[in-house]
Length: 184
Image 1 (cartoon, one colour):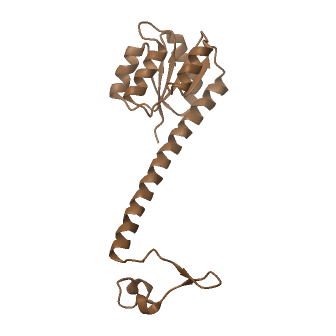
Image 2 (cartoon, one colour):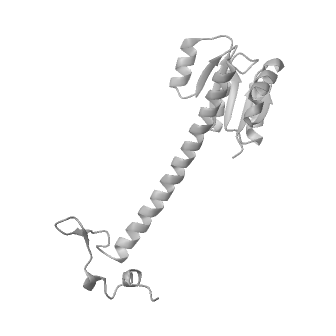
Image 3 (cartoon, one colour):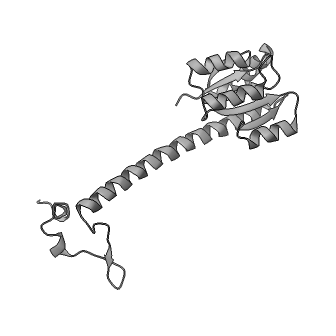
């Protein structure tokens, strides 16, 4: 799977440093120098994770990440700032605007781990959705089978708990073909 992240910071040196720090992890990295430019990238590219500076031109990092959430709610959002405002960070995390809040100067291993865990979280969410769809399909199939073959979901057990099958009830049904031994 192609893991794509967008780095948004108004300082070119920071964008280059982040790109350099993450290069060996094999991500597809895109950059933008402002929130507006970042939104334009988001319109034309599928982005899974965004790292944004907080203090940038007309559109703050937090406002940019709110717009990212509105347009692409599954995209994980990390705010990176040199001006740590703990109350702002707590509010943003609690409101679901952020996945993580990191301060400048960042610690490369901490940043890399936050991103790795973020991508793992995305993959687990996708797997959860896939499994949920599978279960929904199987539930529909079981309901249809129960309509076609009333009692098919009923399980009878003997005194020791072994499943009992009444061969007389099975005979003459379409299920008989499934239960019959295959000719050698």
